[in-house]
Amino acid sequence: MGDRVLLDLQEWALILNKMLRYHFNISEDIKTVVQSIRTEMRPELIPLAEEKANFGKLVKTAVREMWGLEYEVDELQSKFSESIGTMDLDNMDVDFIEDMMLKSKPLQSVLNDIRNRQKAKLEDIKKTYGEAIKDLEVMIVERPPKGADVKPQEGTEEAVVKPAEAAPEEAAAAPVVEETPAAVDATA
Image 1 (tube, rainbow, N blue to C red):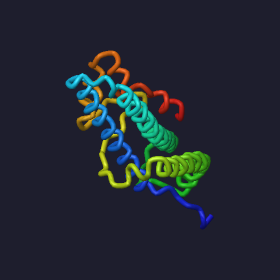
Image 2: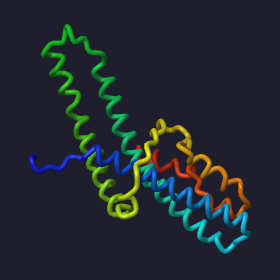
Image 3: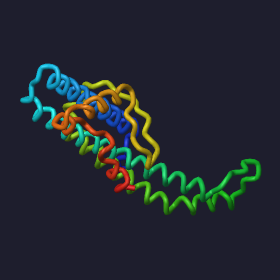
């Protein structure tokens, strides 16, 4: 057991926040291209905008998959908290501690499974996007509650909403952040 590699939660958060910045930057690029299509009447840029939008969807899917794993950990923590109830620290005895440890044992294997999937996802993200995100600043975005519609934050709303108001060809190129919420639900 000593050779087992644990998930580095700080690295997880760093990579997740850089992926959020990367998605934001892609959205800003798309916004610029769509504005160029509109103002300069350059329809030859439509395929470029669509390509960037499709890539942005892939990046957002990766972010949502990371969030999905975090939702699983949160759910497990909630189950454990509910199972032990409230603690009376003044009257805690050995039986309570033993009972709490017995209840936590099955949950530890589930948590280990989630952490292993997180490690695999982190390595996959670093392999796929590592070069693109290594020099980016982090972008802190609060993870939306599970099942809630994802609202763009920190200026991303403008990057997402304005292209969607464009002509039908341009709307197809706009990154629709809310289009893939099933990725989070499928992992939960």
